[in-house]
Length: 201
Length: 201
DNA sequence: CCAGATATGTAGTGTTCACTACAGATGTGG
DNA sequence: CCACATCTGTAGTGAACACTACATATCTGG
Image (cartoon, rainbow over all chains, first blue to last red; front, side):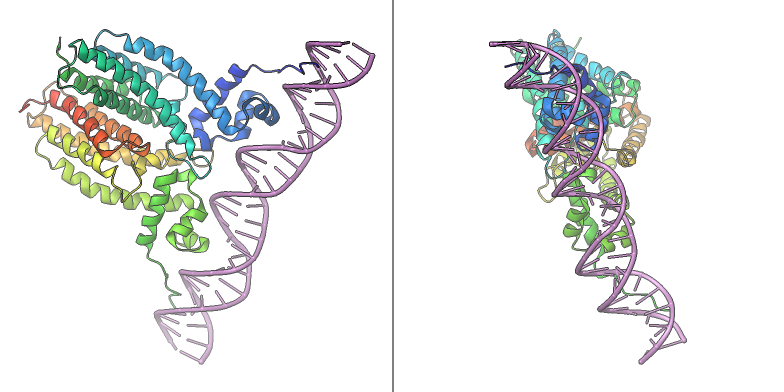
């Protein structure tokens, strides 16, 4: 009982290419023809490896969030709530205008509204965005316990706020906003977190 | 030379129905079959009246932005930059969770990323979002001239910031955030504008 | 009441979509 | 070297898509 013919392409490299197509055109806007061409494979290879179009998206999202989570760990390692927000939003400004990637964020560009048959794609993306928000909230809970945030501060609301600003910046990036414009948004946004902080130096 | 058979449907009523379909499913996710059924007409009537699918979207956007601009006039009529931001963002929180409409904002749900052949839909939506941002910027320029905003304040950055938060809230609303959650985001967001204001009473 | 003009409903058009049948290629275990 | 398992490329499949041809219906102007 042999093990069969080995795969001739690298799954992760192919996923990177698929990711870029989804990122640029969204889930519904990306066609199998575009995906297979970018991945350098033919449809049967895609389906054998990832099941179907939605399976491919999920695999691409897994890869995207995996890299993103490494970065998020660095973000929440900042010493204060204000520093966390600044590191997060300034980093977002840079990442979303990185010419190495399509503008914006895959978790937004992937699909906010979808047609019949793809209804759970927006859910899937929202769930992954929520993970980052949870991570921020936990960090802000700690900041409050440490006396870094005021007693009146609401860590969940702050996390939701930072998450909302991130998403808004992503949409702006995808519609042409440049890095400097996004940094200015981040700079203003951080001041709201600062207003909730005890140490405003 | 007669004037022909009169139209049997009301264009604005039909547009309201089409608007809802685009709002819920996005431009690409909305099908002509869904649109015609919601509008209560048949495809030839749609094409005779609006040209094509994109023409229908633009007509729906015209109607949407027309109503929205009336509201924006009330927003910028608030007495201070801080009050403008609060009225805007609190209003957004309420409007984007109004059960009479699909959640979120048509100018976002309509389509952030699109496939080949619909590339200019995201541009069209971005252009209309930019109109609101320009209106905010003008209002903040005035606020600065009136001494309401600090000398160090950047009206364009503030307007872009409020616009980004609005968009982010819209995405959150469409993925299930409730009114209270959005109001908390708005409440935090306003504090960044407050930090740029001279009178912080 | 007739001629011209525009709207409507039925029933399609060609195209593109996600997905796959199948045959041949390339590996492993015995 | 053979049985078997898996991958690959070619060439499609049926379904859904945006859009329309056409006959009919309903108006206005004369």
